[in-house]
Length: 541
Image 1: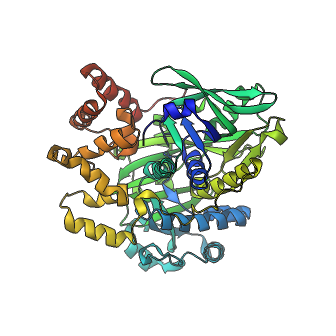
Image 2: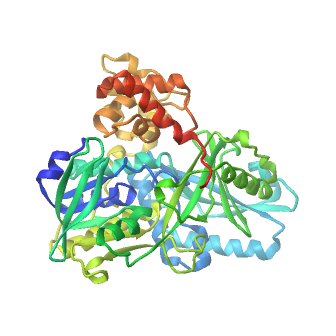
Image 3: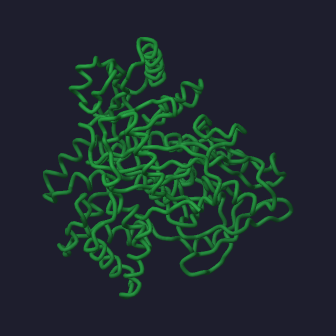
């Protein structure tokens, strides 16, 4: 997969997608698989914002039942099963415990009813060939059984816990990348670090966009019959600039922070509900991920960050409702903030706002032909949203296209029968200590990674303590469109996802990348320096 700059400037496309998060990536894959000629540009790196900075869950949205959003929950649960099927190396079951403290029989009955409905809406969760991916129904655990399963729950007024199941992503960034790899394999022209600057409009019809290559400063035009804006929290801002007037549909931006701390539970996730909202305690790759806050964000989306007060307030909130946690600032190994793009319902309530998505045809809304935009939505339902968008594109272009197959076609890393058998076979052949981690990250593409080590045993060298190796940097630069150290460390690998890597690790990784991309020593040091702000808090202005 290479930056397709020549194709973008020289060819005419059916569909130009502006935005390389999970929505844009999913649409690129669906549209390419259905035979459309697709272009996609992203102003930064793929999946570098909202699509990366989330709770890493693939879930139905249990709390959405309180708003009677049964359709959204059913859609999410169906899509959860599909992601388990098409990407089992990156999506796996996760058991959750919901503890009850002093709620009595009324609260227990209410939760039981909600979880029963959740099970009914996921009636097809067992329809997976791989038994390791099948999810069970919820059940009640009495106080003694719940404490035996998770001692952290023991506290005053603890009554017991419900056990239910959802799913988790091993790496959201790599899952989004696999959508793009599949799109590339089916003919899509893709490029990161290409920013759409203004729409090309003639006689009220959008014919593409003028773009700028951020790496060279070069500007050129991309021509397309239809243009889709899929820029997440930036959508209404981009549209207002592009159309020269405020966008018809407004977004609310909700800021959510996550904290990574040492492992807190024995293996279960916790969903802790309070009067002020809920939070998750999520086991993730040997650590615990704490998420998430939900506060309205009205500043420039590019300026979102985590402050020391954000961290301290969230720790205090968790400790107040899970006293056994006893979390301190020194426990926090890493943190990040993301913005949820929510359809503005006029309430100003980001926590209660729906996570539904909308596809807007600006021919109807703004009297501008050839322009669509996707707003709202959630990670779990991105594939289905892409199916709806691609069908709408085909209809507008009066094309038949091929049927949608993204629900049944495995992603490039999932081209095996069952992940468990695949992993066992790889472990039997390869003696790398981190082979299990690498199998999760690359799946069936693992041989492509290991091939980088042919005649280069130095590329088996470990980069940190989380399983990543030097060969991943080479593959990222050669085949996965990583053009900066940040791309490789934060999104193609997990090197930077557990807090600031030791300087020795950054030196080793940057030297491998410098060799691949021809950096001199000054450039290599600048790349390391550019990475450091990812691990720093910033106080709000």
